[in-house]
Length: 107
Image 1 (tube, rainbow, N blue to C red):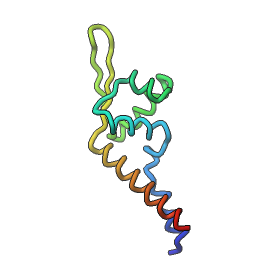
Image 2: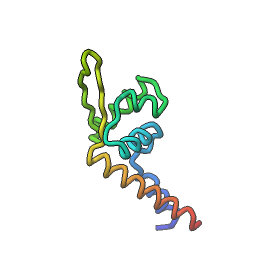
Image 3: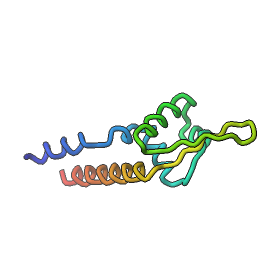
């Protein structure tokens, strides 16, 4: 197998769920914070309610994050946490990207 073919196959193996910019930012934020609220993430990522909800749902469906909903008095509170599976997926993604960068530097 040629070097270019290996690199092309390696790029194709990226976790496309995490590779998307907003979801990568969301998972990264949760990797360095034990928990973030919906409003924390919305402000941090500078995205709309709908965008955050859609991206969070995809990550939740994949088992990468968990969502806990509660009330603080009458005010709804939505909290997100990164799961062990999400942390492993992020670590694999980072390792994959580092390997691609290293391979590209050799060209």
